[in-house]
Image (cartoon, rainbow, N blue to C red):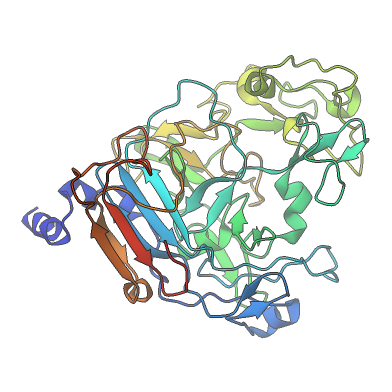
Length: 450
């Protein structure tokens, strides 16, 4: 304890910070490495990578570091600076199964500053749903919600998509990103938007491999797959969501409150609406009703009007094409902890290696073969208040917890505005831009600045 106390004093941190998994779980082993991509399957097979790239739209003209570059901490908040680029080799990306058409987007250094609450607060109202970023993996890559942000347009009789000119669609039948965009994912299950933001909609399997979870890597094919046999340890923390709760890999304790109960793959709380497990059968009834969980989320009737129905289940619109093609087991007469493990948000209250006294935690969901299954990382709602977000400035006193060698070449400083008192962010939100606060100034190596 004396050694921990001396270390805390040396770092200028409270002792509790050293034992906080929100600080200690970040994967910084490769923070000084340079990001690399495969430009083609031929490059991947040959093991030939590049550290700079351009397609005329996204350009990484200078080599960029991978992942976490700095971690800063205050009483109520943690700030993570990252390039958004993972340490595993990214790419290649294609638009078709035969890999004849290249995906038009390439990743670039995003210079992200994420703020996360250190003291998560359970949500009491259902008003915090949002699209896009929902959190970050522990190696500094954004994770997105399960949908690709487009939905079916009943009037047009087709899905909205980036080229359809239909906006986002009706917002009733939301497209599943894995089903509709999975063809563009690389071996790590990531891809990027048209401004180069590499991200995940589902499990980060390459990161799980790096963290020592139940994953193997084939050095010949350069692909990842779930290991054979049973897992030998609880999955590690692979991400943190914006509400401040952790995301684990797919394996947890069989009894959520007993670490000696053995391990098991977490069973999702969702099943396809295929007539099994007490669900209705959309192939027979048509997509003319919403599952009960969606009716609650959208605060609308589960029975749809003729102008709100979705397309018939078909080869073009297979079951699972939309998020609303799934039913929640808890609405089908099944009991969490008996027939399934994870709640409507894709988590549970449980003990874990990092939280021996218990925490709410999300889990990655996969089937017995290792294939990602809905809802992947999080349902359509957070368990806690998602106070975390990407910000531009830090406006309170912070202490450094980690700084990569590359980031150390930049410059950080704390400045107290004249005539003001030091202020800290409250448990509700970080100090606002208009507050008389302490500001951290950051000038990163790769050219950005705040």
